Image (cartoon, rainbow, N blue to C red):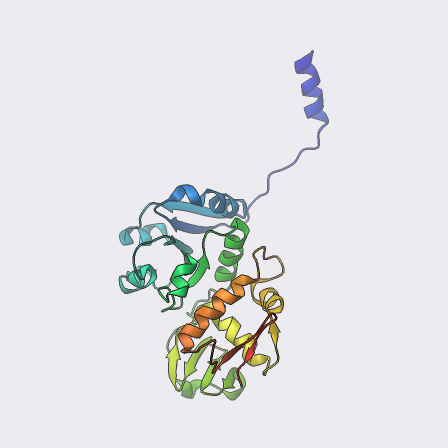
Length: 257
């Protein structure tokens, strides 16, 4: 009777079809401690991503696996600049593959992860925050890398933003200071663009968070401070004597006078 009752209850329950992923994209996660990646992996797989996990990464495997995104966990690394080490030893097959590095805040503070245009996420973080970064990166991928070299003479005036000796080419998402190109992450680029487009008006942390990370972002607004700090390092700017980005205490940021 018990089995019959259970059968009746199951028969009466509405049938819930599993979500069908119309398209999947492949993500490769490389971490010396894959156990701490479980929540992120599950969140990515539930969002229709195929996820492969490795303790270490062999460059020769990249071509065969054809990932759409690489995630490298270097948080807690004892190397002085693990991101820079990867950049210097980059295999040609990685050139067209977007990369997200999971770093600890110490690396950003010491300037050990701010030399290139790879995306950075302070780790550990909530799995939804990782998913949000992944989606942002993949949405921004185009057939032509936005960081490819470009001659300033090719720019048209309407595609440029100018502030002091900084010039932004919005069409190619490149930034120049006194004619020399500066490599920024997509997040740093968007922060700088928001400030320059504001023409000196104050951008609150909440406003920048919503504009860049989106309203579905679950992390705290301190993530803005972390990336502004990284942006300042690349611009050669100082919080105490700002040339480009000034802090409005308790509110947010604006262009420096």
